[in-house]
Image (cartoon, rainbow, N blue to C red; front, side, top):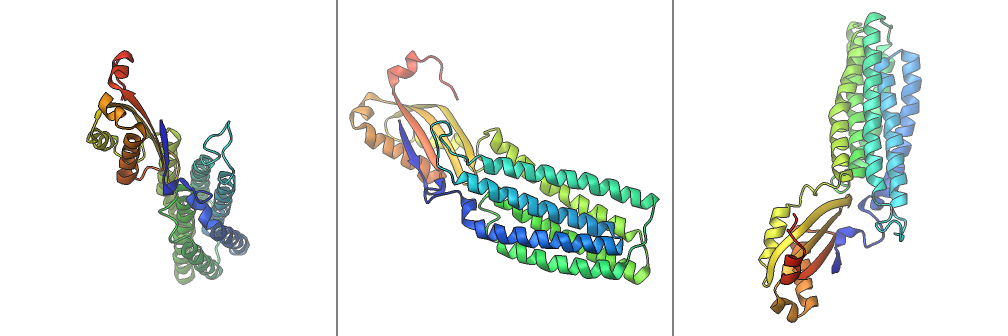
Length: 308
């Protein structure tokens, strides 16, 4: 058997998310500041939309803090009991982020419906000013995480939360302008519902991807059929079975396979053949960690029916 640790395996000392620790710290500070300002603004203006946006900002801060905590745990070295270390904590954090977003959506929708039956007078001018400040602060947060969103599920969750909060601020701005210019108070709960609806697709996508990893499903960018085909094209390979692929954490796909080879191929050198097979997997599919077991033809027959 052999192992191959590709560049994505965080050999440099941590997960991809770890590179952005300082940016996450800044994002937490920005989100926390926005939350305080929006809560004060909501209390003074009577705006539910502003309060909903504040709750969303609070989940941003909590969500990014969870991401940062997961990243810190993920840097801990593997142990005999946890051979992959704490990398999977990042995925649990992303899933928890999604659940927090769902909870905010339910609360916003329920509160907005109540406002239609019991209207509250809202100060549109103050609502508008506070929302503009929140939007500007969120744009800074988006800039900090702009090049991280496609490199880690955890960081993508943080980026999407800040993006959603920025869009929420836009909804509050529009609602504030409508109230300021027309006096139509229903614009506030409507803006709240818009904020809630914007949360749904982000929460769904993040939860779906997290569950995909937690269920150890095949990485979305790894086609096991193609992996099998490439391995079968190597000289001396007779069959491939027990082929499995999954993801430990963002940027760390894993693959295992049993490869049946001819006696001649084994006689030519176990290490040479294994190196070719691992080079095939790592080169064509960018798999971070591969474990390949070589088996002579007779071993496959003795072992009974071949598996996947």
